[in-house]
Structure formats: C-alpha cells, structure tokens
Amino acid sequence: MNLFFLFTLTAISLIVALLFESLVSVYGIRKSRNDIADVAWGSVFVVIALAMLFLIPYPNYIVKLMIVLILVWGLRLTLHIGTRHFAKDKEDPRYAPWREEWQWVKTRSYFQVYLLQGVLAVLVLSSFITYMSNPGMTPVVLILLGLGVWITGFVFEVVGDWQLGQFIKDPKSYGLQKGDLMTKGLWSMTRHPNYFGEMTMWWGIWIISLWTLNPFYIAVSAIGPIVITYLLVYVSGVAKTEQYWKEKYGDKFEEYEKTTNKIIPNFFKK
Image (cartoon, rainbow, N blue to C red; front, side, top):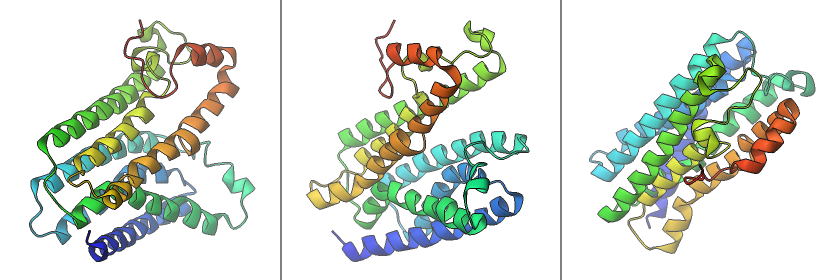
C-alpha cells in the first residue's frame, strides 16, 4: 500500500471537510440554528468527493462509480433535509436544549457540532479514500454485489423517508390515525428503514473498493462503514429516535418494538 498517498489524501480530505464545515458554522451560529449541520451532512461528502476527483487526473471507472454513488446519496439527502430545515423557523429540538445546557455555546458548537462532523465524514469515506490512494481492478462480481447492496440501501432510505413524509401529511392514507406511530410500508419490516438504508449504502461502497486481499487495506477501508453503523445505531440515529418514541408513544412503541425488527428488515413478514 502507498501509505504516503493514503495519508496525503486523508489530510487533504480533512482540510476540505473542516473548511466546508467552518463555512456552514457561520450560518448556523449567526442564525442560532445548529441543525443546519444535518443539512450539511450529505453536502460535506459531495464536496470532499469532488475535491478528490480534481486530484486524480485519470480516475478509473471504479473511482467514477464511487463518486457517482456518493453524489447521488449526498445531494438527495441534502435536498431532503434542507427542504425541512428551511421550512421551519425554529431550531430542531435535538439541538435547542444545548443553548441552555452549554457554556460558551458558540465555541462549543463550532468544535463539537461542525468540526466533529467534518472529522466523522472523512472517517466514513475511508473506503473511497483508501481505494483512491491504492487503486486496482475490483473483480466484476464484487462490483455488482457492492452496487446491489448500495441500491438496496438507497431504496430503503429514499422510500422510507418518502413514506414517513406521506404519513406525517396524511396518516389515514396508511390506515393510521394522527398520533400513531408509522408502522406501515417499509416501516413494518424494520423500525428504521432510513438508517438501515444509509449504513447499507456505505457497506456497498466498501465492497466495491475490495480489489485486494491485503489485510491492512481491508481493515482501513472498513473503518467507514463500521463508523457510520456505530453512529447510526448507538449515537445519533436509532438510539435517540427510540428514546423519543418511548417517551412520546409509550405502550404503542412497546408493541411496535415487539413485532418489528430494530435494524435488519424482516423481508418475510406478513
């Protein structure tokens, strides 16, 4: 492995990410809307991927494929979350309490919300960055497998988000009432189809990057999907969402919890 090139690309990616997040923080801190970080989450990947593209004069088709997948995911997510963000005039309840709990809220927001997000984005991109620093020809069977895994994840995230949006607008369209949990469609197969979809897409990109059996290469490139899976399950996604559901829905959530898988979809559920 070309460790020097790997460290160089990682350092450049980190600089790009931190500069982008610093620009985003100017808006968030001035507007008292740290939830703009959610909008920037997909965008920072797009910015890093495009920056990397300019550093490689003649990228092979695998690099181009991974960049396309990252752009499709990142732009879609930015548009989806951005539409919700700019439709509201108040900060998301997940972020708002920090303004009362934190001292030096602006400084802490800059480091703990924005710069930390930039660092995490670079870690999640490990498969892409590692491949770019050590390109090779991934077997076609792995490319097709990885692409299939990515498409599966993309469908779950996009359709899951769309179904939830439709449910919020009109619960009766799913045979539910206002105040119910969304338990239909993909949400009947897994309690978190959108989070399952996001982590699955990054595992798909990791599979596409596997052109060598070098253990160190495999381990480093796997950092990304491992990090995003851990974050979504235990930190920012599933854990917080389920705690909110427990407090809001009580017995309804307990019943949903008993009948529906937490993460991995039950494709055979009737």
